[in-house]
Length: 391
Image (cartoon, rainbow, N blue to C red; front, side, top):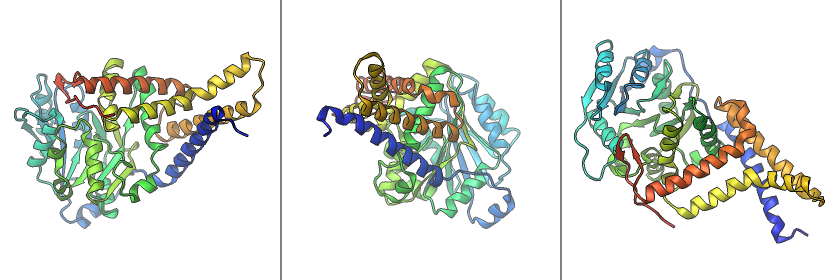
C-alpha cells in the first residue's frame, strides 16, 4: 500500500507523463504558420484584405530598422505600416522616416501625451488602431522581424479559419545566458501545458496564450472587445486581449510562428530578466496562491526525482520503486523539453539544464510579484502599473 508521504513521487511522474502527452498532441494539432507562394491569388480572392501593420516604438533605434526592413521586403502591396513614435529621445523617428522615403507603405505618426491610468505601450497601440485604415490590424513589436510573405499567409489563415484573432508563437533569438535559460521554459509552459486542440474549442478564457509580437485582428472584432482601451492598465495586454476574444465568443487561433516571426534579443542578461519579469505575475492574474502552487509543482518536477536518486546513491536504503519512478520522471521531463527545443529551435544542450531553467523562472516570477505589488516595475523609464496582489 502506498503511504501518504510517498504519494508525491507518483504525482510527479503522472504530471510529467501528462506534459509529454500534451506536447505530443500539440506536435500534431499546433499548426505552423507557413509561407505561401501565390501572392496575386490571395490579394485578388480576399475582399477588403487591406492590412494595417501597427508598430509602437519608444527609443528603438537599435531594432526598428531591422523590423521595418523586414516589412519593406514583403511583396504584399495591400497594406500600410504605421509606426508611432512614443516620445523617443533617440533616432527612432529619423530611422522610420528614412525607411518611409524608400517605401510609401510606411508612415510615421507622433504619439500624444500619456493620459493618466494608461500604460505607455497600450496608449500607443490605441492611437495606432485609431489611425489605421485597414480592415485588419496586425500589432507587432518594434523588435519583431517578419519573414517575407508572412502578411498574405496570415491573412489567408484568418479567412480559412474564420479567426477574429490570430496570434503566433515567435522564434525567440537568444544571445545572453538569461535568454537561453528562460526562452525554452516559456515555450515549454505553452507547448506542454496548453492542449491546443482543446484550447481552440473551449470557452475557458484562461486556456489561451496570446503573443504581443504578433496579434492579427479583424478590426471589427478588435473594436467589439474594446481594443486596448479595455486593457489600458493591464500590463499583459496581449494575454488579456486573447482572453477577452474568447470571453466574447469570438474565434481565437494560436499557431506556431517560429518559422516566420522572430523576436530580437534583449540588451543583455539584466534587460532580459527585467523584460520577462514584467509579465509573469500578471499572467497568473496577480494571484499569489496560483504562483505558489505552480512554483511548487514545477520545482517538484525539476528536483524531486533528482534528490530522490541522489539520496538513494549516498544512503544504504534501496527504495527501488522510488528510484524507478524518479528515473522515469526525469526521462519524461527531459523528453518534453527535447520536444520543445526541437520544435522552437532552442539549443538541444538546454535539455539537461531544465532544472536550472525552472529555478531561474521561479525567481523571476517572485520578483515579478514583488515588483507589481510594490509598484516598482518599470520599462523604458515608465512605470508599468502595479499595486495588484490577490491571495
